[in-house]
Length: 325
Image (cartoon, rainbow, N blue to C red; front, side):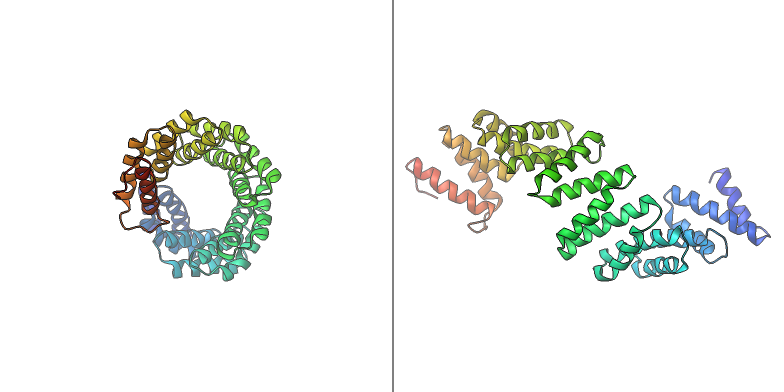
C-alpha cells in the first residue's frame, strides 16, 4: 500500500463524514485504475449511497464492476438507478452500459430504448459507443441490416477516432455489394494508420476486391495485409491470396501460399495445395495431403472436410490406376 492509498484509507476512517466521502471518491478511482475491483466495490457502494456529487458516477462504476464479476442482475439495478436519476452526464453513459448489458443477456428488445437514449448523449464518445452497440444488435440479433447501416453511419460521423474507424469497418463489412460506399469507408480506415483497425480493413478490402473480380488489386491489398503481421488477419489474407493467385494463373505463387498455410495444419489450404500439386503431376504428395486431412476428420460426411478429402483421394487414386480407398 503506497502513501497516497494509506492516507485515503485513514481519511475514510476520520471524524467528518464529508471528508470520509471525498476520500472514498479518490480511493475508488485509485483502486479501479489499479484493477483492484473487489476492493473498489464496497468503496463505490459507499459513495453511491451518499449525497456526494459523484454518487451517480460511483453507482455507474459499481454497475461496471458487478458486470465484470458476472453479477448481472445487480449491475442492471445499478445502471437503471443512474438512468432514472436524470444526471446529465452519467445517465446517458449508464443507459449505454445498461443497453449493452441487456443485449448481452439476450434481451435486445428491452435494450432498444436505452441505446436510442444514449445515442442522443451530448458526450460524443458515449453517443458513438451506443450507436456502435445498437448497430451490432440490429445486425446480429435482429437481422435488420438497413437499420444497422444507419446506426453504423451515425457512429462513423463521431469525432472519436477509434469509434469512427470501428464503425466504418463494420459498415463496410455490412454493405457487401454496395461496393462504392464500402470501398470509401475502408480506404478511410486504411489511411488512418490505426493499428487496431487497419489490418481488418485491409483484409476486408482485399476480399471485396476479390469478390468483385478485381484480382490484381485484391492480390496487392492482401499482400499488404500479410505484411502487417497481424496474428489473425495476416493468415486469413494468405489463404485468400492463394485463391487469388490461383485464379490469376500464378500457380507457383499460389502453391507457395497454400503450402505456408498447410504447414500450419490448415485443412482447407492442404486440400487446395493438393489440387494444385495434382495439376502439376505431383500426385503422390497430393494423395499424402488428402490422407492427412481425411485422418483429421475420419467420420465426417461427404460435405465435411474429411469427406471432401476422401472424395479427392478416390479421384487421385483412380487417376493413378488404384481404387483401394
